[in-house]
Image (cartoon, rainbow, N blue to C red; front, side, top):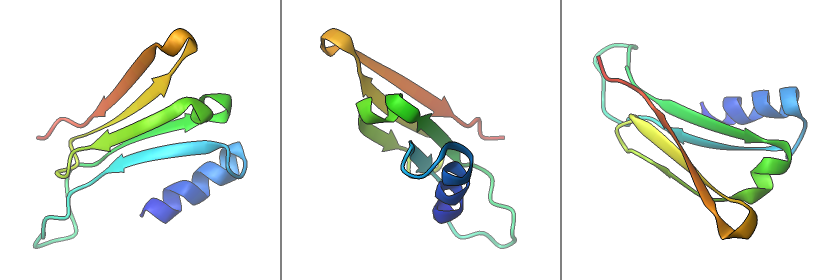
Length: 83
């Protein structure tokens, strides 16, 4: 699925103009339904300032750390609420 997200981002924003952080569960499921998963997408000039990404192995959150002017760090956290 990650390749599809990258392909779509390239189509919308242009080749090599985005960074994606994803998280999903690798847990076995008895059917096709697998709740969970999170994604963060950073595009254009801001993608060059991303220096770290993180995720939860259960697919509940991803984070992206961006270094700004003066060495300031901005952390974005994208979450998924489990039902």
